[in-house]
Amino acid sequence: MAQAHIIDGKAIAAELCQSVAAAAARLRETHGLVPGLATIMVGDDPASHSYVRAKGTACANAGLVRFEHRLPSDISEAALIAEIARLNADERIDGILVQLPLPAQIDTHRVITAIDPAKDVDGFHPINVGRLWTGTWGLVPCTPQGCLILLRSVRPDLAGAEAVVLGRSNIVGKPMAALLLAADCTITSIHSKTRDAPMIVWRADIVVVAVGRPLLVRGDWIKPGAIVIDCGINAVSTPDGRSRIVGDVDFAAVQRVAGAVTPVPGGVGPMTIACLLRNTLAAACRRRGLADPLPL
Ligand code: GUN
Image (cartoon, rainbow, N blue to C red; front, side, top):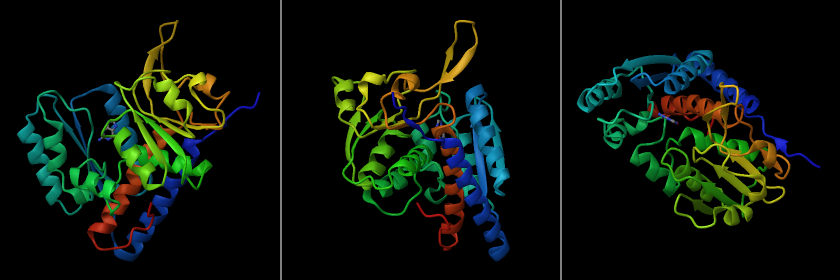
């Protein structure tokens, strides 16, 4: 039986990181400018720590400067917002990333709206959300941006495609739907109250899954030849008591039906980091009135 093409997110992300590094080197030579990214990590959730560490390493490798801020889990909302105000005013910093989720005492929306939209490299500020939905320039959330690049690597023209997005988070599902609509897809958003999700997914030429439920999407949900993008990163225990990472898609089963599919790990994850670097570079240029060297 034919097997789906496995979309190599690791290789595509490495290429994008190289392009960012080359553009950053040119910026340094021509304008003496080194883009800076501030990461804020509140508390010590091990998974969040490892994501933030990976973002910092990628920054350094691409020749960007990273300013790391680690704050205690019991920090007040006011103190966190005061820290963001300092970073907003710091000229060395082009991008501010507050790793989510935040502890319960902090209102995430208030924190996100405290970030200068010009430095909002996550693209979560309502101003950037509005820009995305109205088709004007803005910083676009990293994970859906990465998914779009992966989709285009196998289908450059997405116009007219039936696209189904599973999950409606502000981080992935909603901005993914906006990007697919802007690419002229017909979009359907599936969520926890949707009736008969498998039947709706079966219609799709493109399926993007971001629900955080291990192996939810099975092979018999997928139309033969569809492109399947898996944003899930779920730790599950194996029978021998170890932990391993799986996606939201049953990769082994879907691979037998789909036209193309992303693996976990090595699919969407590396793209999120590459797009964060890309956004930091874009923010650095945009803030100084320079052309974005790597437009979307
Ligand atoms: N937590 C999970 N994904 C993300 C992301 O893309 N950005 C931030 N800031 N936090 C996250």
